[in-house]
Image (cartoon, rainbow, N blue to C red; front, side, top):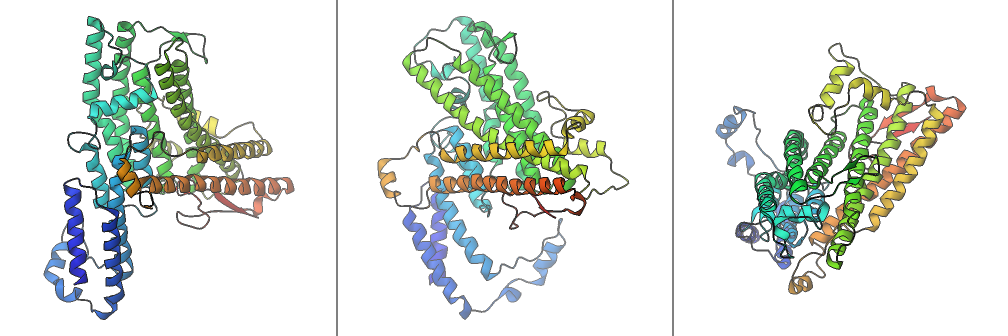
Length: 519
C-alpha cells in the first residue's frame, strides 16, 4: 500500500509540474515519509530482476548502437536518488520568484552545479520555465527580458524602445533605429535564453555547447556594432575620451552587452576544462595564463562600460538612481572577476616554477607537438574577432615569464594569492541576488521556515563555491611557501608534486586544481 501511495504522489507531482502548478512543501514531507517507510521494509522483499527482465530484451539493448546494458539500480542508490528527485523538483519551482535576469543566471549556474547534479527531469523542468505562458518565468516576454538585462548592465538611461516612460517623441530616424533594435532583439533573444538552457545540460554538454555558441555570439557582436553606429547617429550620442587612451570614442552599448556575455562563456569554457579533466597537468600553466588573459580582458571591458555610464552628468533623480544600481551590479561582477584573475595568476606562477625545474611529467608522443596541442586547446577561441587570437609564439613568450627569476615569481604569486583571498572574502559578504525575490506575502509566510527555498539552495551552493575558492587560496599559499623554502635551500630536485583528482580530499574546488608539493 505504501508503494502505491508513493507512485500516486509521484504521478500527482508530475501532473502539477505539467500544468505549471507549484507543489506545496507539505507534499514533499509526505513523499519523504513514505519513502522512509518503504526503505525500512525493503529487507522483507526479494529481487525479481532476473524474472522480470527477459534475455530477449537484453539482446535488443546489447545490439543497439551504442550498446546499452540492463539497468540494475542498487538499493543504496535508489532511495537517495528518489529523495533528491522529490526535493529538486519542488525546489525548482522557487526559481519563478527571481525577478532579475542576472539573478536568474546565477540561480541556474549554481543550482545545476551541485555536487550531485539534478536529474534529467529536473533539468528539463527548469528549461521549461524559460517559456511558460508565452513568457520567461510566466512574467515577461523574451523581448522585455532582454531589455531588462540591457537596462541593468549597459543602458540604465539609454534609448530602449520598451522603456520610453518620459513620453519622449522620437524622430523618424530614431523610430527607425528603435524598430531595428526591436528586430535585433527578436532575432537574437533566443540566443540569450539558450545561455540559460545550456546550464541545464549535463556538465560535458555545457562546455561543448558553449564552444559551438562562441562563434554565434561573435557574429551577434558584429551586428550589434553596426546597430550601435546607427544609434550614435540617430540619438546624437556624444563621444568622450576613454581613460586608457587619448582618443575619444563612443559607448557601443549594445555590442558591449553582447561582448560581456561572450567573455563570460569563454571563461566558463576554460574553467570547465579543468573540471572535466580536459587538460593534462603539464598544460595547466598555459591554461591558467589564458584564463588570466580572459579575466583581464573582461575586467577592462567592465571598466569601460562603467566609465561611459558614470560620465552622464545632469541626470534627474530617478535616472541617477538607475545609474547607481547599474554601477553596483557591474562592481559585483568586477569583484568576482578580480578574485578569479588574482588566483589564476598566482597558480600560473606556481606552475611556471614547476615547469622550469621539470617537476611535472610531460609525455612526448610521436604524433603530438606544441603547435598541434595549442591549436586543439584554443580551437574555441582562434576564430573569434574579439578577443583577438594569440599566436603560439606570443603565448609562449608571455606565459613563460622569461627574464624573471624564480624568487621574484614566487613573491608575485604570494602577493596575488593574498589579493585573491581578500577579494573572495568581499564576494562572500554580498548576497547572490541583486534584487529581492518577487514572491507574494502569503507565499513568503508559507515558506518562511522552509529550508528548501531557492534562496537557501542557491545561497548555499554559491557560498560553498566561494569558500572552496578560498580553500584553494590556502592550498596555493602552502604550495608557494613550500617552493620558496626549497628554492632557498636549493632542494628543488627532491620535490614531489601531486594534483588531487576531483572529489579528492585535497581538491578544494573542482575547477581549480592546486598542486600539493612535498619535499
